[in-house]
Structure formats: structure tokens, C-alpha cells
Length: 539
Image 1 (cartoon, rainbow, N blue to C red):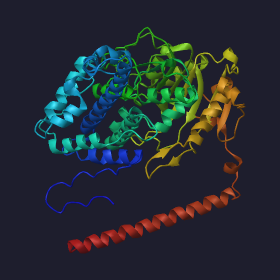
Image 2 (cartoon, rainbow, N blue to C red):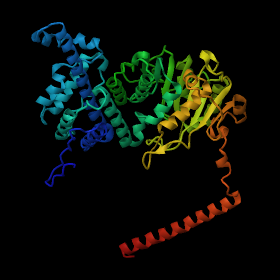
Image 3 (cartoon, helix red, strand yellow):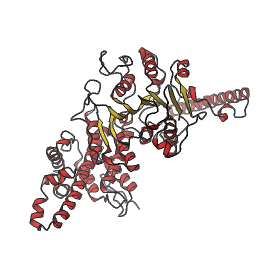
Image 4 (cartoon, one colour):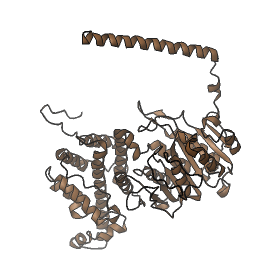
């Protein structure tokens, strides 16, 4: 049973963890504890506190694990305890194993043993500073924010104690993997807590997984020009591992404009053991491309929808298909991605639905030019409520510069695959829809079968149009539709949708009666509310 609440004045104590708590319990308990830190801070502020603590614990756990391995190696070499103790402080052992060096004063055991509510803020800030000083790749990544007046130091110490007492091993995974899951869980929770702003750093997991399964990033360079907290990269690495590939088969590159989000991404990659080049600092992709001379085999992105305030140079060489409008960066993002894509590469981009139909300020001409250049491979209409942080309907664009039969693929030159996934997904709760795995693979398999990828051939996937879901259209058909790319125009409807057995005239009459009945009921309720309010006010 959960511990009882205190009856005395003051905040209730942090709940404890059962001795054999599972991973879901750990996530839930840590979140509840973290939520107590909020106080006068909004979610965007206390997010930095909590995720920085989780990262600090990860760095220390990885260091301790490596230190144990080194100790055993030195014992096997016959060294005595004094020599081993001295050797264990050699930085090179840890760097050679890809582990961050943790100075003595920043080690978790030292912090927990020596900190008090009065010193905790200073000690944590000092620890962050020492770790950054000792590891150049973390320079500027860890925020020194704990020694501030608005921090509830008592609650902060309780959270540190809880993290310290939480067993991250024994869940069928390495401690790093468990901490990685906790970190992702927190990113998701913070995104929901922040509402619209949460979309700046977090893309729903099922959307990310759909993109990854479609473009299949097995090996090569992968890039995200608006990488947020790095979720695309984490899922891509998981894809590689799931297909028995090597973790180092993908070279990760990214860029992020927001300083705090850039820090989240750097920590997220580190905590998952991914060594990516997110440049030495945050920067505007349009104004300051941090990877100007590189081209990429895979690109995945969820850039901000309909961005109005963006840097624009009319003479930018990236605008191969037309100059994007001043007040909307959708086609700037897509052209940047196409410019960075290698000749044999594949890109997947999340975009606002308006990008499929807009003719404003030359966007229709840009879309037409992209289609005539035959770089658009697939369009996917997504269902509503996948993005809790925005109500703007979204779609997926898949780009491929070469749709020929190279590498044994099916020749799809002059054609575009349309997928209408608006009826897929299930409601996780009252406000959020998610794609279960079967829906993700339904979408991905359709595209892979259509493209004739190696994996599709191995799985004997054969493409065929499916009314109401997918259709392979020629550029001539698309031209007849004024280059509008809404999948619903092309996939048609199922027989069930065409005829449900009720004559159309009768259906209209029935729905009209239902509508007017609802109007009448609404009017009655409104009158009753007015009457009750009048009684309360004495009118």
C-alpha cells in the first residue's frame, strides 16, 4: 500500500519505491517526485533541473561500471591494491572506452554523502562545471542552475536521495538503457506539461518510429536540421540494433536553434551512448548551416510548422525549386533538406497539412517544380491528435532523388505513392492518439513494398493499390489535380465507405433531424442554466 499522507502542516513526504519495483513503477515514481520540484517554476524550467540530474546519474553509473571493468583488468595483470587505486584515476582508461571522465568531486557517491539542503545547490553546480571542464564534448551542455533562490532545496535533496536509492539494474537491461528510457519518458511528460511549447523539443514516439521504419537507416550519415531533443537519432539507432546492425554504422549529425533544447539533445545522445555531431553550439539552420559541405544518406526532421519569423536570403543556393515566401518556412525546410540529401539518399519530413495544397506566395509553383524534378516519393496523411502539442493537422513527405531501379529496387520514376492513414491509430487517452506497431508497419510496409527495398524483397512484400488506403499515382494524374498532394484525392474510398446500405436521401433526412434535435436540447439547457443563475443572483 502507498504510504499515508502526513496530517501535520507541511508537504507530504516523497513516496518510496517497493524493493522489486518494475521499470514502469520507477518512471512513475520519479516523475511524481520531480513534479514536486515545480513550485514557482514552469515546466520548461524544472525540466532542465530533472533531466540534468538524470544525466548526472547516468554519467556516474557509466563511469562506475567502467571503473569496475578496469579494476578487474588490472587485477588480472597482477597489480596490487595501491597500484590499482592509482591506475584507476588515469583518464585515458575511460576515454579509450568511450566513457566520460568524472572528477572525484563530481562523483555521485561523494555528492550524496556530503550534500545537505544548505549546500546541495552549490555542490550540484560545481559538479556540472567539473564534468564539463573534464570533457570537451560536454562543454556548455550542462546548466549550472541549482544554486538559485527559487530552488526548493529540501525537495531537490529528496529527489537526489530518491534517484540514489532507485535500482536501475535488474530489469533485463543495462543501467544505461534503463536511465535512457527514464530520460525519454521524462521528455514525453515534460512535452505534455508544456503544451504547445513542448512540440519544440519532442516528436511523438509513434510518428518517429513510422518515419524510421519507412526510410530504413541501416548505415551511413543521418541528419536532422531541427533535431529538438534528438529523438529521431535514438529511434534510428534502435532500428539498426533491431536489425542486428552495429551501433557505429550510423554517423549522426544535427542542428538545433534553441540553446536549452540543444543541451537536452546532447544529453539524450550521450545517455544512449550515441556519439553525434550536433556542432559545438546551437545555431539557426537557415542563417548558419553548421554542416555546410556534408550530404546525407538519411534525413529525418520535424521542423516547426508554418514558421513565420525566419532568416531568408533570396539568393540562397538552397532554393533550387523556387524562393520560399517570407512568412512561411515550410518550403524552406523542405528545400534545405533536399539540398543536403545525397543522390541516393532518402528523407522523411513531418509537415503541416497545408504544405500539400498551398498556392500562397509561390508555394504551389515550388511544389510543382519538386514534383517535376521527381524528388517526391511518398505522401502520408496522418490522423488528428497525434500531436498533443498542436492541433495543426500533419502529414509526412518522403523524398528520394533517385527513384530508378538501382540496387534492385522497383523503378518508380514519374510516380508518387499516396497513403491515407487518417483512420489508423488508437486513442491513448481522451486527447492523444498513437500508432500501435501494426499501424506503423502497415504504413511502412506499403512504402517499402512499393519501392521494392531489399527488406521488402526478403519479406516477400508485394505492392498493390488498396482503395481508401494507398495508391501509386503518375505525375500526369497529379498534374490533372493541379499538383495537390492530399492522399484522399488519389486513394479513393472503400466499398464500405461508398455504400453503407442507407439511401443518401434518407441519410440526409436522418442526420438533419438529429442535428435539429440537438439544437433544441441545447436551447433547453441554456435556458435552464440562465434560470438557475438568476435564482442565485436573486433576479
